[in-house]
Image (cartoon, rainbow, N blue to C red; front, side, top):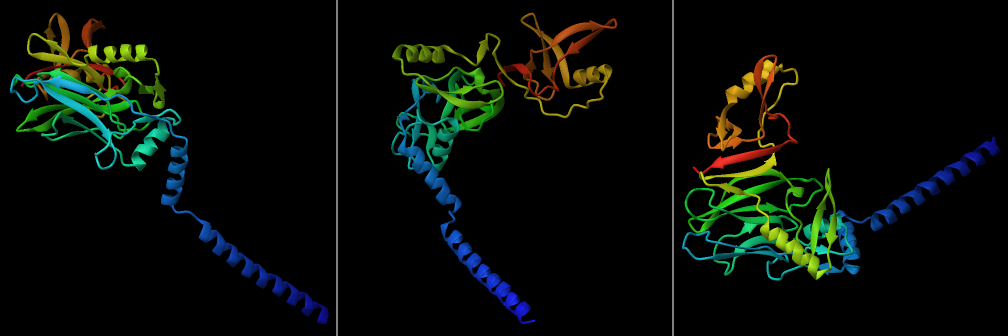
Length: 314
């Protein structure tokens, strides 16, 4: 009996000691546990210690945007959080996701403004702008308009492009379109390298001659193509938004196409006019014969399809 009591006392003492140690361990671990903010600060401090900054390209766009018949100059800025000092977009020691993380953590600012900062700014993405173009007059008012693709970060090639016009001393967004990053030329010095399914790396160029060629390529590229009949064209991802029933027959599909669109010929080319937006025409359509009937082949249901879009002023 005494033997059993001694064993129970030893076991009880062991568990008492165990509880005491566990509580002490918890207290120590709790003291050492870092907050999310602390962890992020440690990460950014570690990155900045090995940093080799690359300023990256800045777009400079000219045009008569306000209609005073004088050339305006728009300058891309990429600055610190106070919009005072120009800072680097990229770093040769960072991968793409590190650049994105540092930019967000330091609250870097991206914007496009005129030379004397006298009008409202157009805000860019977390890593500036992927592309900016004076797209000429697309509203019919006789003034130049603007097309921009903000670089918002993320690993997807699927991004948005935005059209702007200048009205009442301020920039007004007209509409936006879905595009891919790879549709636009790389920028000199440093540029995100889009892959087939995403963007995971940044390419650096040290050669002055290659950077000169890249800049010439960028300046001669035109996303918007104008036609003499007061229309303009561009290519983008599928801009149509609707659900396509998987069990539709060919006959039902043709009925839908002819209900929503009207076939027309422009410059000897077949287009489908969007009856819900009658100044818009889609050129990625073909006409073929099936079972002695003519059919329109138009991939309105495919969100990965390249669409040729033609729009008329007004």
